[in-house]
Structures are given as C-alpha cells and as structure tokens.
Length: 326
Image 1 (cartoon, one colour):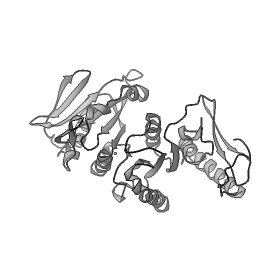
Image 2 (spheres, rainbow, N blue to C red; image 1 turned 90 degrees about the vertical axis):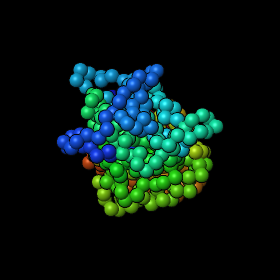
Image 3 (cartoon, rainbow, N blue to C red; image 1 turned 180 degrees about the vertical axis):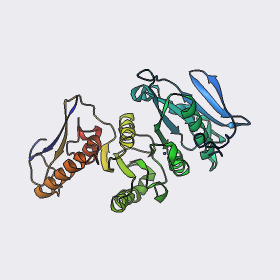
Image 4 (tube, rainbow, N blue to C red; image 1 turned 135 degrees about the horizontal axis):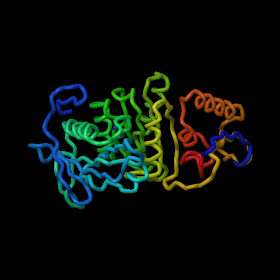
C-alpha cells in the first residue's frame, strides 16, 4: 500500500425524450454493428447519429462492472482516433467515441463537426449502454478535445445525471454556472491559442471555493503544450480526481512531459523563501508554508481533498508532484 506523507522542509526536497430509469417511453432504438475491433452504434432512422465503442475491458470480478469513458472529438475530428486500448486497459474501462452529426472533409480525410442537438443522441447512447451492459453508472466520465471540450460542458449541462463529471482539453469555452454543481477538470496548454481563457478558468475555480458549491474544478496549466491533448497519464489522473466525489479542486502547473517515478513514498514538498533549494522568485514565507501544510492535512483528514491532486497543485517537488507526489 502506498504511504502518504506531507513534508515541510527547508531543503530537498463532461436527450432524446427518454428516461430509461424513470419509466418514460424510449426514443429511437440503438442499433449495434461490428466494425473491425470496435462496435458501431447508430440510431434507427438516423444513421448519422453514430458512435464507436471499444469494449477492451472485462469486470475484474464476477458480477462486477467496468467504467465508461465518453470521448468527444474536436472540429473535423475522427472519433475512432479516441479509442485508446492502452487507456481502456489501464482504467478497466470501455470507451464510447460519438461522431458529430455533420460530416466534413479535412486534410486528414472525413471528419465530423458537432451540432447543438447532438447532445441528445450522445446521451441516448450512454443510457443504452449503462442499461444493457455491466457498466458502473456512477463512474461514467465525459471528456473532449477543443470543440469536443465545449461539447463536454454541453453534455454535463444537458444530462448531469449521467456523468460523474467531465474533463475539457484545449477547449475554447470555460466552465460556467450551469455546471458549478459538477466535477470538471480543465486542461490548457500555455502555447495553445485558447490559453487566453486561462484567467476565466482561474476565476471559475476561485468562485467555486467562495460559493462553496457542491461541485469542484481542477485546472491543469500544461507548460509548452499547444492545441492538443495532454499526456494520457495526466488525463488518467484527472479522471481519478473526478471520481473522488468530495475532493476539492485547485490549480496545477505541470510540465508537458511528465516523469514517471516508482518511489514508495508519496509526498508533498513545500518550500519557503530562503529555504535550501527554493527558487529565487519564491515569495512564500515560512509561516505561509506551515499554514498551507496544515490546510492540506485538515482537508485530507476531513475527506475534502485527494492526496494526488493536492500534490499536483501544491508540491514543490516538480519531478513527482505532477503525477500525484510519487
């Protein structure tokens, strides 16, 4: 079992009219067709309302269930590019990759664009899968790239009961009051044109803390990352945070390429101005460092924080903090 510790040191240191569970009449029937290693879903009578499903995971125990990741492509994107076998195996999850209703031609071949009503059939696909298959309904996460990130926020606002929360990556839109009772992760690269939205994300995170709403937001600022997805290890960390229902959010600045460590001790290192190893521009006083540690300890003790995200947001050990302190 990984040990958790806090170290205070001076030196090193995101509907068709249908409510499956509510008893209302179903909408159009979902049709499944094999498509190579995947399954293609579409709505009867609307072949353009479609998605691809990767079922590359099995319940870990008899009668158990798997997670579901709903992955939303960007403008002109190709859904099947989001069916990552590695992510599916690592998270013991199925991946659903819907396609925007509008087909478009791009320099990479046929792609898809989202339309406003697409939220309805994506929600229908999720309901269908959770009812038919051994999927843990409380562990469904939606995430998207760019326009898919915007679509993630629309999905959360449209059908919040379907998701544990959502994650946006390189999205032009930031979370707003429609989702402030939900759990939302936000990734923006510092060289992404959409980095201009960073102040709005910071303001949203701070506003949630002041409002003391049920939801939470964690903002990952990825150094040097352009308009693309972050490393899968960061995505996986954000998905794990979404599933920590009571844990608070925050802001973390992380390198574009994370290091992987296999240390036995999970730790948070907090330095202060003038301490050994502290950068010259560090302004935190020793008293502020002590106060931060006590706040983290108290929040962890009350179940209001999750250690890996606290490490990601607060640890001054930049080789271990970005991936949870190990």
